[in-house]
Image (cartoon, rainbow, N blue to C red; front, side, top):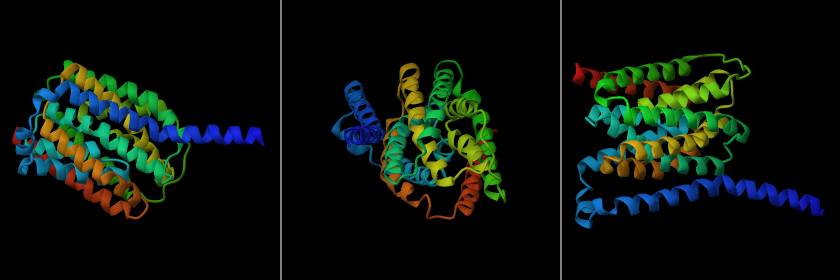
Length: 295
């Protein structure tokens, strides 16, 4: 009886960690940002910031998180495509997306845990390799690669991601196969996510779903792992590139955090294939618009 009670207490403590760790990290991050950057804000500036442009970034945050939380992919690709099409520079858009994702993926991870959508074994396999890949990509974009030079390549990369999303949506009769080289998949997904401003979901989620994994647990688990990936890349962007575009960041954070619980609830309620095709087509249109501006 005593041994059983001890096992139950250990299990209960581990369950609390799945919620406690994201909450503690996010609260610590919030206070750190406020402490280090409070001089950049004033009440007048804060009020003035709530203009039409802010509402655009807020709407992008809401839409991107609804896409990501329900499909398990698309936050970075959707938000980056919108931001680039709106004229936001690559480094600012990628930094804004990853700093905001530190909050939105935290809210998403807690929400998916609350609705029982997480396979913890899968999360553990993806976590460390994904973090290493994201740190490498964030460092290169912040300190080595010229954002203006790679802007057209990012737009092309977004089109490739969109084609992957549409292809996975149209695929029929998926046969379940054993997933090999999860670590390599996570490293590649984390790296491309940091450099391109998106890709973790389209690369990792689509590969796992394409091998016949359960959509509910795959989406919940990849979203949960994405919190660590986004946190690692966001911290790297802060250390090596600084933080730019506060209006973009705050708009994305507020929009994403508000819609995260709704997305976790809707994950098994919506028809995935039509939405995946619609999101893929939207990303292609936005990326072509960005390319047309550059060319």
